[in-house]
Image (cartoon, protein in one colour):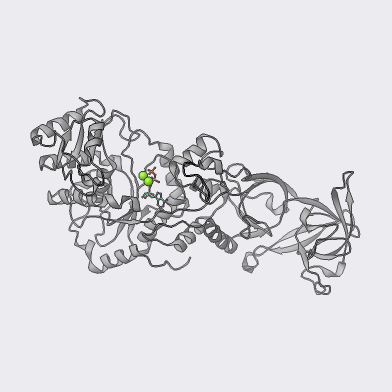
Length: 590
Ligand code: ATP
Ligand code: MG
Ligand code: MG
């Protein structure tokens, strides 16, 4: 693993630690919090970060950046990272998403359990606290129940250049506000009839401070709290409270929340000055989200791809979801290397997909054992090799790691080679098999091509050659004959036929749905029109016999072809199915 690089967030953390900022905390947790959840005593001097997805979909590559950043900071500085479901929105959340998110975070190598702490939290477990805090705001004159319609509220919010207008309900008494909010909780009103708003400033330059809504009525069943509540907090109210209750020190989010930070701070200040939260309060820090070429990272678009069946479900290996990545054979270490490489900053940027693939290749080249697979099988017949006779050849499992040992590959008279390794009439520079030319069968012998057989359409169906008995790899005579071509092969009698899926990019343009040069001003492109029609090819390959019994998710470099994983859904020992994660070199567009 590379040494973690510096970034502006680490600088903030280091400065806070040096200043002892969080060591000022006088007691563990927040007042009374132990009563609502099981957090072990906090070590006040340590940082706490969190990863707070809403369980309303599957995680994608962008989330991986956030996961690795938050869990990585905690690991690097000996702190904690909380896994928290931001499940304050009853309509869209499901247990299926909760499970898949936990799986994905674990798969990336991140853990919310350490030293006896299980830092897995649900925002919905804080609803009692949130209501109590909302009532505190009412009691202190910092919140009021508004009864305008949604349209009136929108119209009165103002614009970037126009201040908003005070609601006619803004000056309700504390007693009236409290009574209405209690009755909202009791279920006396319909959805949308009233809403609780913070009372800040309808003329604030930052629109987010123009009396933002904090609690709304929703008669809906929640996946965790069932029908206990018919009022639910707004995200912008809930999130700072979740952070504070968990004693998060650094609350890291993407740049689009920058404008929300003043409200985040305003809210926590009001609660701290009322003695409901202890200082130091969490600090929100924004960084730029991951944008990648050739993929879409918006939940809405991913849902559309799945629902309209442009792909085969959330774990389709072509999707930039983490379940898709896992099935594709991408490695968690590759994600980590990628995250280190792209770093963390406040500048929006678009990362080339090649950077992602290169990180994967680098990790897999180091980690993966080598095997041989013939993807486009063509029969090679060694006419001077005895029929029915076989011998062992030896191939290293990893050229850079002799400690990984070697395996035997049976060699015999009939082999499978790649169709592209034979040319009857060789093009310029071609060094492999053509009549009269010699080449090496890697880990085996040098052979001299003598000709080929064709079917009635002129298609080559078998290649003939003779072998040079003194040239076996690893024997003293191996180098006595010099050849330029080197090819891989599998014994026809021992080969294991297997389905292999070759994946390519799901989109054929770097910015799916984006405008292109020369587009008419009124033209609106649809990202679905940019789907690459050839993003998946299914073939039957011939594998070396040792691959027959691989376990699902085992990954290998197939020599000359790239990195392949045994499919975690369809592959089973005895009947392997492989997915190509990535080619050996960047072959895109060539
Ligand atoms: P939505 O806005 O539809 O809820 P989301 O992608 O923001 O989708 P969340 O579940 O709210 O989903 O995100 C969890 C965390 O992941 C947040 O902290 C968010 O900032 C972060 N995150 C989401 N997308 C990216 C991205 N492209 N790059 C980096 N971090 C991201
Ligand atoms: Mg979100
Ligand atoms: Mg979002």
